[in-house]
Amino acid sequence: MLKHDEYPGVNELDPVKYYYWPIVGRMYRRRVEMCLNQCTGGQRVLEVGFGTGLSFLNLNDMYDEIDGIDLTADCALIQKAFETRGVKSTLRQGSVQALPYPDNHFDTVLLISILEHLQPFDQIQAFTEMRRVLKPGGQVVYGVPIERPFMVFMFRMLGHDIRLEHFSTEKDVASAASGLFKTVLIERLQSFAGAVYEVGHFQKQS
Image (tube, rainbow, N blue to C red; front, side, top):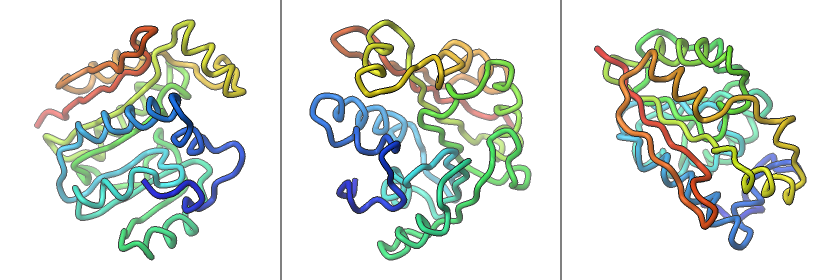
């Protein structure tokens, strides 16, 4: 990870600040590590909802090409900032439900804390698009929070109303993924209050 003030385009609403907080920061960093540990490497990776590019340094070690799509990120600013660090990327604004990429293009599609923001009825469309752009044998790796009283409390402490931001549960996401992909692994991040985060690794069948 870079230092907090080295990430471009960060404002007071950006969650990247939480990665540097004591206790909470360890949990935030661990969920990203769990997702990255499932990425198998290859030629091309697409990160959906890349935000500030938090994972780009790691992805650069595993893939030849990094593509990213995000609804609101300043793509030109982030792309330029990482180019100065030797990380080339191609970033666009757009939605996971209408990916502007050709069929059978990526080895990996990565989504870290993105799919919970979709409505349950939108999950199938999102995974259908991911399946389309993945090569045969390619992988989807995602991470989503597990909603439980502790998670709701933590979000309140951070100034967020989970009901206004999260619309799908980990079960909604896994159900949609398993209908279109082969399940490779589902792993949970444990805390003193139980499981708080779920990482899914799914594979496109040939």
